[in-house]
Length: 171
Length: 171
DNA sequence: CCGAAAATGAGACTCGATATCAATTTCATA
DNA sequence: TATGAAATTGATATCGAGTCTCATTTTCGG
View: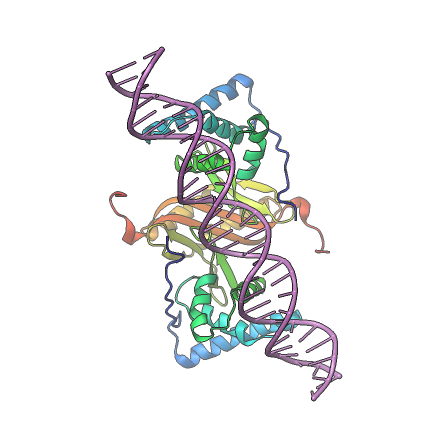
């Protein structure tokens, strides 16, 4: 009945880049966000930057609550609503994608400059495994074209047990 | 700000079967459900049967609220909780599948005896287009095997605009 | 028919997400 | 740099899908 697990969020570079390299990457993404905001007549505020940085430096998919908790420590005035609003903005400009989680709490990941991939979600340990399958994509695109559909985004999640969680039986 | 659209649910056979044919189909599915219940020491009650019949005869994916509204008319004592509970039972025995909808309200479809398929969801008119792509499935399965993952179910939804809703611009 | 177990439905409750709104911040412009 | 309209924020209220509780009713084997 705990409100949420994973109260502690350890932040470290996702791609283990060189510091300088990472800085440049970070700057590029910030700029993308900035441009999107300007296009809408909005500003890149301290809070928005913090939230984006948090998502950029996390080594895993985070929920809004996790982002909020992590940032609250270094900025106690931050409000939940701002995190929700900012994540929505980041989704709109395609920097962040929702990865529907198991129990109604959505998790988010940074999409920027990362190749397209889908997810396998372990129902035991909640681990999210990213995978790519260009061939699968290809046939998916073909199906979309066949229907005369214009795809804006998609969600492809496979639920089951990961390699480490294949216990013989549920106790 | 309406609580929910589509208050009216028109029920008619999904597959336009012959009456006798449909009756037999219905009986088979009811029996499947029955068997699942007995296996768990549960009973097939009037409410449970009504709910399954409703899902079986709908021509589209329904939300719990829609099932509830439709049945409430012919059985005013029916409770929301019962619909939620029954849909969960139907999911457990594989007769019904959740099709994650746009706004947090899940919709459900009857899976029984229908071939596997995925969905394209129109963000304009909420229409759900079912499609099949055996090749796509094949490469998906391959990816799952490659990860040593054991898949239990999956969700593959493509969001965008359907053929009829490709307006030139959002006003 | 009896009685234990299952099922129901009304309503309280949970909790992620959104809306509201007064106070604060931002930035183009003077 | 000062100004003010527009954007932003955060506290809080609110919403709503889904779950839980529990007293009452139904089911079904014996």
